[in-house]
Length: 492
Image 1 (tube, helix red, strand yellow):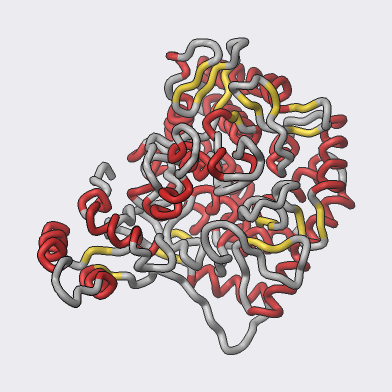
Image 2 (image 1 turned 135 degrees about the vertical axis):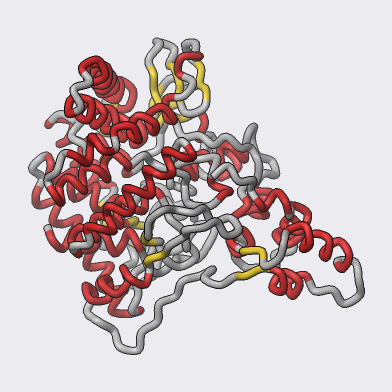
């Protein structure tokens, strides 16, 4: 698991391929598997690259395997949508019992999202599990949990996805919520004691460095406010172009701010790559400042992790740890209310660590305190009103109120936030709004499926006759978390 990132071993070739835009999608080269020892490929490239008639694309295809680089599901007869999803579970199942190229090995089978995403993704897997639960695929749910535990135990955290170039960042920490789903399925509290050590290790990853902090400073994923309170932020240990978006990052870095690459990568840890949420000017990616922001979603998820650790500690009769994590959760709940609740707008917002105030971005991550039951009823009523007035459209809930061309902005509706929105509203008794969220998005999914025979990564919430777009790559079909959330919503 500490294997050297093989992309570093072919850096000259990799750099040439990506800069020459040999492939339309730069992820192709990061996912390629060398067919010969890397030293031989490098030597051959150095010898041949200057020769007359040399074709870089032909050379790459002769030396690397691209099988399975993109998943495309085509059927002659269009099945009812639920039957289509049931077949998709098997078609999106993968195993990686050994490392191949950049692909990390995992002990159990798993579900991939689809399209260009042919590896295990962290937060996607939670929403996939929602559908697996409906489908009665309990063993695959347990496989996903076991794979996450394996990664936490061997890497120290669950990487963004199971590739070597993602070993510098994680994704929103959903492991404790995965355990809740398994418990909800089999009603056996053993799931919490079985993975207590794993929960502790993931918590240590997110809190690493807090003991070194002075007031009004940050290190890795932890920040201490000027008042001495601990908050968390997304972060990436690398400050280099992302291999999977290499040339895009290099071009975007021109006229960009300090630590541009790390800010880009840190936004990827959030799963929101990219959104006006991260931009200092609200418009341009060159102004990205993820490192200056403490996020309401991350801190809410870490509250849930602390609560889960208190629970697992109690089940194991670890009295001191139960007290410790109970106190940490209580303190974080207080901090969420102090730093993320914006009284002026009656909604939750991120907190700017340098400006000591809420960021202006209005975004759907405001749902997290309601999804997890952290808000009081008055706050929930205000958030629900914001959601209904600013985020709910004919095709579902959008992620922000700004249209920038970034895929995590207006007009796109993403599966995770339809489930979070539905559940958040149900938690506080806003049943009619919950049903509207469910019906608007599910209707959009059904309309696109009827027209295309596919389930998509994201949907256009405003123009439901149009397939969603924006971002660095075309809309993908498959699609793991859409399948999961659709089934779960239709069950409720």
